[in-house]
Image 1 (tube, rainbow, N blue to C red):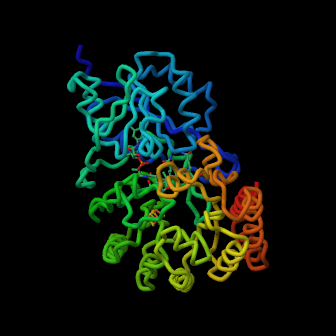
Image 2 (cartoon, rainbow, N blue to C red):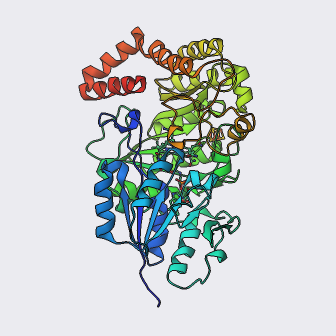
Image 3 (cartoon, rainbow, N blue to C red):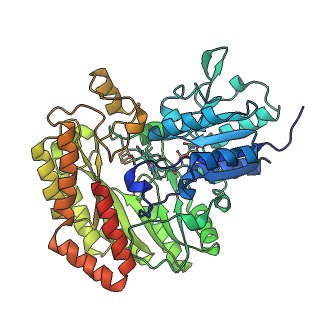
Length: 467
Ligand code: B12
Ligand code: SF4
């Protein structure tokens, strides 16, 4: 029997650990991948809802009640590595055998068969074209799952993998994410000190992929090592639609926003020419910054740049395959500061060759380059990254319980020179040494005078990183 409108329910699992879970933390991100999928599905005549369990802080019982009341044909859930336990438990609880259980996102992309004990289908990599074909399969327009590229599923107890799906060549052809299905008022960004004027925060992506090959990162494998760009008109049109819908702050989540100078220049010039009034932040590489471009970015509304610094020890950066010199990072930060942009620096602690001495160097380096904020992650080798495979081969992984694969808890592998306790301890010391300084306290005081609530929020955020 042909069914015209398939009912899809897309779920964003809750974020699990202290830093994000606390009601005091204001870092609530948008499930952009799901919003893209919803958009293409809607365009293909499916009925779609997104339920952001994370943003809505829903308990499992309420989620199950919601699923029952919706009675969808398909449940699709996003899954990063630490979400595996939640996804497994949720799918086990879905009683209706007619509901197709689909999982996608970074974890199934790396380990497609991992969730096939509970999921009917795992979608590998970029999902837009695959879900459209899956929708056709459900509507009997495609007769075999095996004819759809980019899937993994079980047939007669055998795991079937349908082969790689080509990436979408022209990403301008993908409709804008269906943000109207998300609870806009729930999303927020904790760091930039801007007055949101009661308006919304959005995340947006202007390119997919990254040409670099850092050994700890999943991005190159997730996007098959290729990078594709949206054209500037397409980007501006999405920004305009956001502004019309009461958004004021946009965080561009591209892996490397400042990869191509001319694109950044063109984007900023059009923002200025069209007088698009909004504030934004982005993720950049310090070695690629240019003063004139930073100035232009600031003029066009940029308030904060985020940079993966990773380590203050050159040897560690080299082992990571980060392809950057400490001196380039130092120069980059000095330019960022000179134009008056806020910065957030990401450090990784406990990498394979990390020692007490290299941590001390990282602390000194952080104080030298002085990002406005820092985040320190305990090194976590995500499945199938270069470093994960290397550690697994050497039998150095301490656990493959994916729930532990969050970088605020405790190391999941055996470091050559430091115990897990040392790494957890040094992470705290790093944060204390950076934040408990007169100049930071003065800055907080200055913020307190202008925006007491914001200063309180920042103190809480620093504090949450310590527990
Ligand atoms: C924004 C972001 C976040 C946000 C929000 C994530 C979210 N729910 O969307 C926040 C800040 C909360 C976050 C947190 C974490 N993140 Co993060 N994050 C990203 C980032 C920078 C962009 C994600 C994005 O929107 N991409 C753009 C969209 C279009 O792509 P997408 O989300 O992958 O979705 C596509 C496909 O995956 C697929 N798909 C996705 N979901 C589904 C679901 C179904 C049903 C189907 C069919 C298909 C499908 O189709 C989508 C469209 O093509 C990526 C890096 C990257 N470049 O992707 C890292 C990344 C996903 N994060 C990563 C990590 C490690 C984490 C944390 C575990 C970190 C931690 N704290 O320990 C947490 C886990 C959060 C959680 N869900 O529990 C890793 C994932 C590694 C892994 N194996 O899981 C990545 C790849 C970064 C990296 N380079 O290593 N993250
Ligand atoms: S860490 Fe950043 S620069 Fe390195 S591969 Fe990942 S996304 Fe690219």
